[in-house]
Image (cartoon, rainbow over the protein chains, first blue to last red):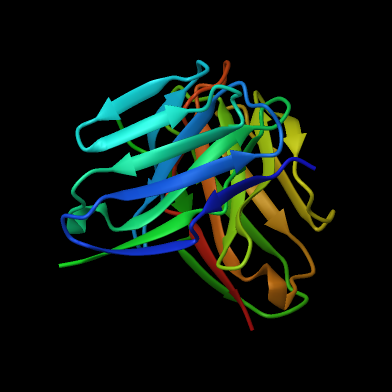
Length: 110
Length: 113
């Protein structure tokens, strides 16, 4: 069945360093969503990408959708302690169903 | 606008029992999805309901079932609980038409002894 993998699984960075997580799908996606889950919290929607090669920015966060619409990335510039959490990508599987990636847990060391 | 509300927040059960979890979506949202989150398996899709109809189902045994009421509130039931059912169960709502962002509740943490 369809799989969505993320790498790395864990990432520790010093505050101020950059961070990137990559999302790879076994099938072409019509769109991709990104969520952030703080420790002890629930996933919170960050963004949705729809177009091939699309790049969107939210302050220090840059999201990219691959040309083949099978991969995506999230890049954080100059991480802060508030960026701590697990970042998930999610892609549609058929109709009315989203497959979540395995997640990347980010720790930021002050 | 109130967010997605899940009750109870915590639940402790023993093997063989059954449990019912509740989810009240954001007002006006008609789609409710359920997910199981565990450290080893991540977020796994259970099922999705829209207008009282199950539109999609994940790869879980028949012990896992759900329903949705006319006011869009949803319940999830797990029968004959197993140790492996210990997890955080998350509910997410969306307006329901097309590919839309999902709004998650705080979840119900279920522990099986």
